[in-house]
Length: 571
Image 1 (spheres, rainbow, N blue to C red):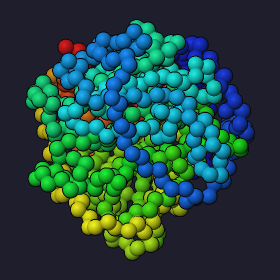
Image 2 (cartoon, rainbow, N blue to C red):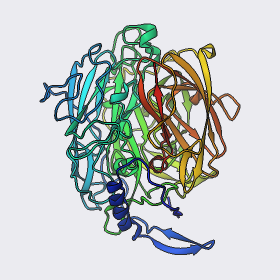
Image 3 (cartoon, rainbow, N blue to C red):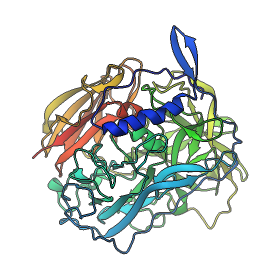
Image 4 (tube, rainbow, N blue to C red):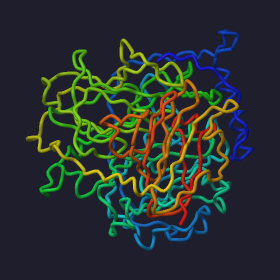
């Protein structure tokens, strides 16, 4: 996982606060000083010293329990922003889908141990923990989450104490989506909010897309399952998420019930409870003292040399000889991963059941899965195939030297991320299954298409742009509610890769480089990995709610350096 990052000139000012940009630059200077320059091709190329060595398999994998709702909130939540709340727009769906469960989450400083051989250190996290609290939500049960900003107003190190929380990628009204300029703290706010505030209430109606067409809570073919939430503050998404501001949000319904013993004839009975395990994969870099460091000046991207799963460096996990569901997320800053499950140095098969949180029509039997940043994959692994005492390894086989893109060659020795030890005693038999049919996919009706858009992703003046335009907070597209469009996503930036994320609506890939997409990309998606000179054509609908949303590169360094565009859904 060695890297030789090449710096580029900083981008021109964007819409973020000038005072916070100066803090950003001053804080980054400390990190930049940790690099040792040398000459290569007449350029000064910084070489980052490696992180201190750590012993693998020194700690168990953290497995979270879901957060518990609170009995009430004070002040009360309401359609209109409260007096101490930041000046958000009114909740569009509050009256139609009043919240049935309430949650409170604080963005604050916490202490975290990445590894026993590194010092316990300060992180920024939701409720001060890494990963943030795990949510279990259910379609048809609306919720409201109060995100309270308790980060210190004075910047300490990299990042910004202003926050905007994005739930990626629920069918959520704009005012609760976590728009990049909806950032707030008690002392300041972004230009799309009316005033600062201590907190922001996010109302999640927990509906499927297609409310207007289907009524009720929408079209169940549009369900999501594995989602996540993270900070989305303009200019500072990369450092804020890197410091720890991310967590899982899992959603269930009458089909994917979260109960492997469910007797309903439509229930899938996938592995559930303690056998349904989210895995947040990321990479970090540590200075010589073992403290987290980050390079904010290299606009190519940032990759670390220490692999983490659920906030721990190379943990181990004791499993029983039965089926497990693993919900895998690439939560890195710039690193693409290609995962395999290895036993005695040979790749093992598993069932790939969902991509980007969306269940496939039928499971796919595979031996690897490729994920760009923010892409997800749900995998079912049957450990009953292995002798008791077996050790298996989840590995990343992608060679990536810097933040630009993965290399074409695989690693000769893959990086081991997580060790499974098959030695937990079975409590009865395994009632879970992977049925031959998972979730029906909604049809693609090209007769609905009213416009075809060309969106080019380019490098401009050392920064990143969409259609040669840097993000300025103004809409670049205004699709009409109730219509469908085709967006042609073209990577014209040269030798870089871009995992492109479109907020709010799931899309369907029509073609990749003029050909039909592979089987694992035929379902609904919200992140579209586009390599150098690639072109992906996506069918999108715009339904049920109006307001401002964004499209951006989820290499969060590219996003922070202006590869982001606002689109408004209009009536």
